[in-house]
Amino acid sequence: MKLWTAAVILGTVTVGILVAGTTLLWLFPSAAGAAEAAAAGATDPDVARWAFASAAGAAALSALAAGYAVAQVGTAAVGALAEKPELFGRVLILVGLAEGIAIYGLIVAVLIFNRVA
Image (cartoon, rainbow, N blue to C red):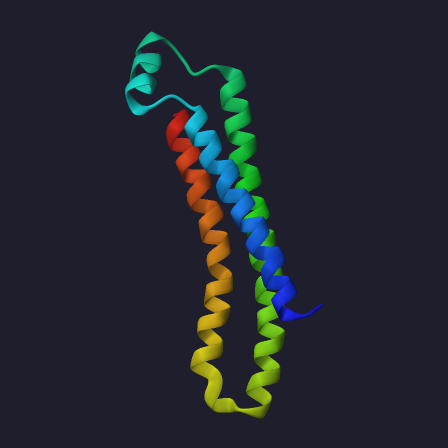
């Protein structure tokens, strides 16, 4: 698979995770509504169940996508470094960007947890 094809696939997965996470955040009540709900009682168990499942899905899928991206970019990076060792700094940045996908999913998961708690 070509590197640009993998990048398109991973970009699509990441955008899907972010859209799903922000949609779930939109569906949950605002901070003022959450304070009223906390004063009235506990969070609805169905909402909490879906929130935990979506947070786990966001973190897991983004970690899988980041692993795949690092594998593809790392393979290409090793090939490039074998021919031109002076490209190390540029290649390291590309691998770091691929790892950033996992951080996006983790941030979405934390935002979901903050809305439920």
